[in-house]
Length: 468
Image (cartoon, rainbow, N blue to C red):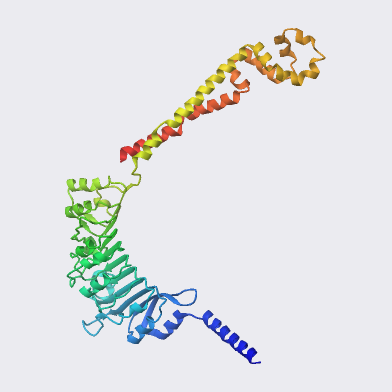
């Protein structure tokens, strides 16, 4: 009895655990815990009901709330924005992002987004749709926020006032592949050499607003220290109302000699001669995208930029740059002339011309039909086999001229009639001979030789070689 009771106890315990596992939903649990302190932009569970992705706007979280979030070790994607919304005074609201120093507890964290959303409205509500009526503020991030995030691969920062401590911590993220910085400040940074240690870093994005913010300072020293960088995106938002829509700032873009940049994306930037010169230094560049840009270039500099399109592979895209577009879009993919020369060689045509020679030999054989005596003697064996029963009755026909009687009553009347036509019209021998099918094929080969695919390809390849 004791054994049975133990078995039943274990059964009910395991079944209750299974029910709890099936009903597990950590997103619902966290939403209920935080209540109206936050606004969830995203919350996803894995197949077991555990949180793996979360996005929140913080309106009033405390330290205990952060500890609750950081207790979910299965989170791989975390997006956090401290939002004060519209403020009337310059004081009385949080100006720093705290309580994120325990992110290291999220051992599986791969994607991290930290932002600050606080602004002041400078216009009446009637102009709320005008971006130039807003003044946005930035916030600092506490020390040790990025420390020990060993599995982090993507880091995005929005309106952050970066410190030297932040840069030093970011330089220890060995698995970091992508860094995106939007409308942030770099004034407090003195040294970025340690960023060279990030050997896996291949993408950097810098975005800023033209109106109401200083965009003349681009952290090129920081960018150039990413020696493994392959993709660089620089975006200046200039699609505003009125006169502001025509603002395009010049950037202090400089490229190091040992850069490995393959993709360059410039948006809303004034392209000058110095910008073109720096672009030409990108020896590994394979794709250039100019979006909503304006050009301040003379003809000589335009020619420099045009030479860039001769590289291969190279893709150049111009988007909303029609008024001052120096070049058409370029898409050079085929960079191996050896392949084009191989296809252009008429080796296949020579083989086909040999087949035409064989057709001429068949016509020579068809000329033997002009002498029916020879053909009948050679092919009599074939006629004797089906005519053995009938030739015994009319043996007299064999004694007479074979040429005349065979034309009247041959057993294979169809062939002899056609052969008679061949004697009258030797030009039709191509259709009558047994090898007429080959002659027909030869006629088709003649047509194919006239419209040979190889000749077309050679013309196309000639254009491609001439283009490159």
